[in-house]
Length: 438
Image (tube, rainbow, N blue to C red; front, side, top):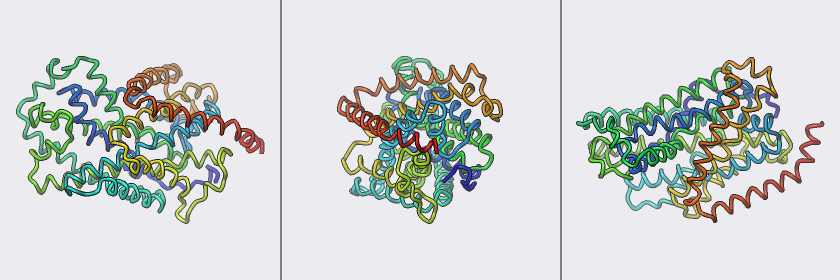
């Protein structure tokens, strides 16, 4: 199970497919309408501001991935630069944060109901969750190819939506008017941008495949940067069409289906919902399944988990760990949690565990100066200190803003889970030390 024996399976285009599929999903099909209700014609600009919010944590992970690429990247960064106990806490929070898997499946089901009224939403969401789970059981190369095909269909559909919609817009002056862009002031604009952050995260998890790709020092930052830029350009176009085709009051809080009905003929509308909207949710779901087991596998090598749990099937997939994430993702579906609650809960927990590898960058130049100096993508030392602190402030605000919506029950459950994990760490750390000494 050593890192050095990992076969180099993934190329640039495989990783671009995984990254784009991970990013494009709930944000564009669910959050766009909500952001419009917050900031009106400022929605396209909010995507740009969201990029600025996401850029700093992403740059931090890219710098780590370039300097010390590993399978299970983010976990190993936390382990090596913040300590082994902190790394297992990070990994445990990451597992709980994958309730976000359910949001993609539930969103898929809700859009499917637009085409097939009366379908069972729970069954449909569970079915698509099972489908992506099974695809990844057949190995990462199979999943990556599946991902690449879906991403091509998805991007083509969204570009067609933009090109078709732009012809229906007569007035672009709203996008340069401060009153229209900031109808609820800068606070509303910032809130919309922070919400849209969820639509841009995902490229950082390319680092999870650091031990399974060619030339990771250059490929990781390149894939992360290019995929983010492509997605932002795409999202700006979508937001312009979503706000410009119909009067603003008719699209507040609504998803892309509202304008798609005006832009497209009925047959094309059906194709867009099925080939664009629904595919976007599947790609996000599939991409998470593609990377999620890497950290657990590395934690097993470190002694935190029993080695039997890392058993692989004939396709090289750690099927027990994949099943753990499947259970986490399907539980909110079977218990009837709403799409909105799952999205906000997953986003908040994601902001918490997402800070761990970002903060790890703070210690890179001190604890591994040789790797830092040799990294193809290297930040100045001052940036490795400043960027993590800025990320903590931004993400801290996001977590605070989610507090009331998630409610005390949700936070108490998360706190209880953390206490259990800390107890497990205290019990298991003796075994981990013994593994390291041997």
